[in-house]
Length: 381
Image (cartoon, rainbow, N blue to C red; front, side, top):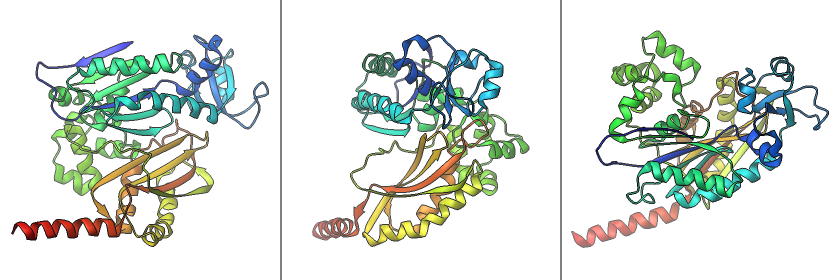
């Protein structure tokens, strides 16, 4: 296990957020099914051909041993084989991977005040209350051990920080089987030398635009004029500046609310183009909002879902402080949420998009509460 702890003598202040990243998840699942694969170069292939008959396709994910040969996600099978002639291959088996993912989420749920499953192999845990004064590094070690014990030795990398974005960066810091804890007082020091591209949500186009104005690192971004960033990048500029300063306050939002509405659409052509994906999502807004309105719901959380060509599902959400009942809140959330997906060439393209709203309540319930509060205020006046 790789351990990196950036710590001061001061007590942890603020939220405790953990990002759990299941290392090389699809290949690791195949190793659970066939332990003889451990230590070998093998890959999971996106293909419509059966096991033992695979002649074409693309790499969905591969073991770390295969990566040492230069094999990577989205690479054609022929290219992967040329780099690693002895590469062992298996077709993608999403139902099986979901079973293992569900086992992991069930195993770690008790460690979280709130658990947000971001994708099949990644989750955020807000542990602020549950940790109860225990050191974050020991708490994270317990989570890792629980996953190994209850999920047949499966490994993961964990990042712990006081913000969601920093926890995600920390989870990527030491791989595989890493544990990185960044105390709040050391957060800016940790972020300062990192490239702006380490932030989930700052894609290649934004990176290029930042570099054009002399911003290469998060330290430089933190010191930039926030007004100029807002003028150049809109709301995203302010969000990036907060991330670089370690002050962003996005909450960990659960994915399994009792009440939610969603809609989705399969694309005519697979794509990684952000503008095209946003266009497809924008087309869903009006009809989707009408459904929310027809049910007389108010909502607090808006999310978008992307289904890749390898059938992996990724979801990103944003939660408002107050309940909303307007379509603009859905529309405005789409662009910002899309920035949090990796749409580069090394990731499978998108085949389906979806919108969702959660934290739903009936309008009359909210109005009833407001009326009750007014009555109490009148009483005390």
